[in-house]
Length: 42
Image (cartoon, rainbow, N blue to C red):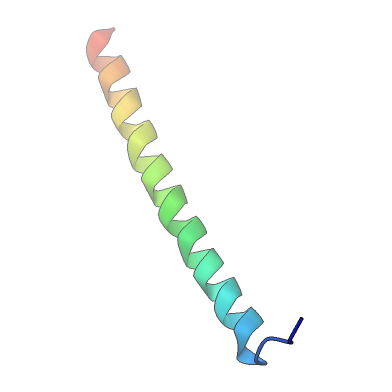
């Protein structure tokens, strides 16, 4: 298997980190909505 370019792993890591941050932000927004709806129901 050919080796990736030197910048390859770093770019992949940055992309993965950005994806993780987006996922975390999305989960936070979802949990905030869930807590708000729970408070509204109680």
